[in-house]
Length: 242
Ligand code: CO8
Image (cartoon, rainbow, N blue to C red):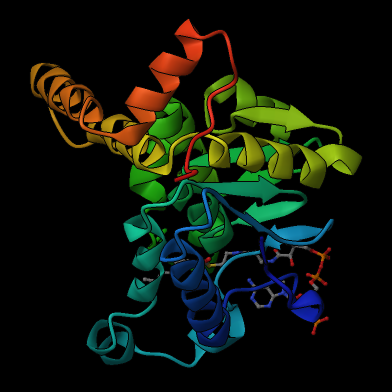
C-alpha cells in the first residue's frame, strides 16, 4: 500500500510527492511478489489537488519546459493492477491520480471534483479525458465548468467509482480486494487489465479482436493450466506458485 501523507496540506501533490509516489509504485510494480497495489490518502483527503502554492510561482515556460507533472504518467504505465482507496477530498490532480488507477473504491465521505476552473486553469493530468470517459459528457462538463464537488454516491451512480463503503471499512475493503486480485495469476490479471484498457483506445471491432488475441494468449500461461485443472479437480487453484 502507498499512502499519500502531507497532512498539513490535505495531501496536495507537489513535485516531491510525485517523485516519491511514482518511485514507490514503480518499485512495487516490478516486484513479482506483488499482485496488486493500493494507493490511499487520509480520512480527510485522498489529495486536494496539485499544490497550488507550488504552481502559483510558475509561468508558461516553466510548466511547458519541464513537462510539469507528466511524471504521474508512470502510474498508467504500471502493469500491476492499482486500486485507489479514496476518502475525503479527491480534487483536481487528486481526482486525476485516482482516475489513473485501475479501480476506485470510495469511502462514503469521498468528494470528487475538477475545480481547476476556479483557479483559472483546466485539468492537466487527464481529468477532462478520463472523467469524460468514466461519467460521460454531461457530468464531466458539469464538474469541469462549475468546479462543483460530487459525493461518493453520485460518483458511483455515474460510473466513476467501483464501490462505496463506510469510511471505517475503506482500507479493509481495498486491501481485501487487492488480496483477491493478487490471488489470481499475475500474468492473467495484467492481461485482463490490458484488455479492459483497450476499450478506451480503440473501436469496438478492434477492441474485440484485441481481446480475442489476449484470450488466446492466456492459453500459453501457467494460470490457465492451473485454473482449469483445479476447477475439474474440484480444488482451489494455486496461482503464482511454482
Ligand atoms: N494546494 C496547496 N495547499 C492546499 C491545497 C492545494 N491544492 N489544498 C489545501 N491546501 C492547504 C491549505 O492551503 C491549508 O493550508 P494552511 O493551513 O497552511 O492554510 C490546508 O491545506 C488545509 O486546507 P483548508 O484550510 O483550505 O481546508 P478546508 O477543510 O477549509 O477546505 C478544501 C478543504 C475545500 C479541499 C480546500 O482546501 C480547497 O479548496 N483546496 C484546493 C482544491 C483545489 O482547487 N484543487 C485543485 C488544484 S489545481 C490542480 O489540481 C491541477 C492539476 C493539474 C496539474 C497539471 C499538470 C500538467
